[in-house]
Image 1 (spheres, rainbow, N blue to C red):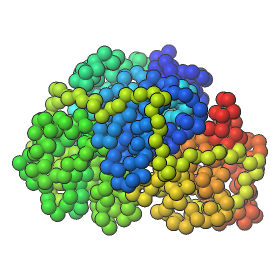
Image 2 (image 1 turned 45 degrees about the vertical axis):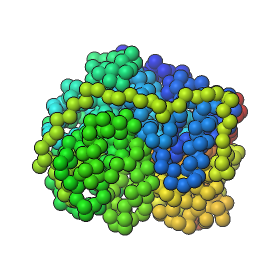
Image 3 (image 1 turned 120 degrees about the vertical axis):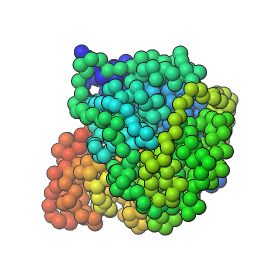
Length: 629
Ligand code: F3S
């Protein structure tokens, strides 16, 4: 039977179940990745499993989100992560080395292998032909301990690329074109596979930009073939021996197919609100901006930044705005130093910021009140820039460079297109530390607070619909990123006080006072970041079930891992403040929500596997694993 690329990799890693679309399987994860935002909890959860050392082939703990250590608690977290990784057998990528996803495909990624990461942009590795899947920290902890990762085999969406990009149009424009076509919900339940004659014109970093933003469609993962382009990239990384060929079989079966002629792709901008709020450049050119941020795991490659340096060479950015460049990795940073680009960017008036996430997660470079910040990052939801009022628009490096010169959104096709060809890369792994083993003492500051015991799901759930929210609620909305919480990620009692901070500042106090209850959501509840804290914090506040019209994959899994029941129903029939009662003693697929306030009943559904039901009855993944599963 002919197979897609994803099916080939899944088949080679299958540990439990049958490889049929729509069924649950368990697969072996070769590589595991954590970062400092979600990693402290993931490592505390790993410890709670009682496993003596990392058993996965490779685990890397990255410190990137708050690499500038904006609070003492963040610095404490970094020391905890460095020592616990070393103790249990994981490599540690230190502050300043760059963003996990870019470093992983540059220095560790292997075509045909699997990678799980406690970050939703783990599919970035698909640019190299590696199957990367984002998950909650608990799932990553289990995989680091050698356990399988469970997923429902998704459907396959084939994206055929033909033609060649026009001058000053880039891979980010392709990623935005995909989102414009399939929306932020169109990838839910799918793997995206990129094929076709056009892909040979795209480098690995360009492919990684596209797989990175596949996460914004809700897709489980995105992948490109591994071909001569991949081989050449691995050779530049000094890792040619890691190359292997990967392509779909002739006649492989896909559930859907779209074609994108690269020659017709225009420079695009996703205006504030959602990554699929995409406009042609001519529709938004001239819009006043206040900031430009170029970098992140989406567009922080040397190739991206070299293009920007060439476009700004001998020119000056507008002094009406602030412009920063933050490379995705130290490799990119050193290359910019070596070839003189760093100096060109500095002379143009660009501020150079160390490799890492920082501004992308709202740590520094926070937009002012009602300011518009143009960024080459992947997300533009409310609050993502670190405050409620700042607005974010997304674009590629070419649009960002042209706009930085004018101080308004500008069409890069009005400028000469630089010819950038990367034919060598400098390798320097000095800031990637090898593990030293159990002799290393794990250093814990007071801010590192263990999770606590998970509670079994009671037979009857009773309480108030504490909060009702609309469609597309992201994990950023449930538990904000940025300076409010980023230093409290290892301290759940404190973090949970910020739950739904932007939508309802009274929620956390009300939930705590009432001893918990229910959250009522709309479509695609929990989209976006893999942020496990968006499940941990409601759990800490006593939430026992979330009722929504539909759930995003990673968040649904995180809820179950924390013993919170995800249920779907027509939430239009429930209002905030209603008292609800649900008999979940049998956990049948069809459930009934009794609305005690309205005197009505609402039919509801749950789609838990037998394994997930057992987890909920135990109280969550940690409690279930402690039972010997
Ligand atoms: Fe970091 Fe932003 Fe990527 S927070 S992992 S650079 S999406």
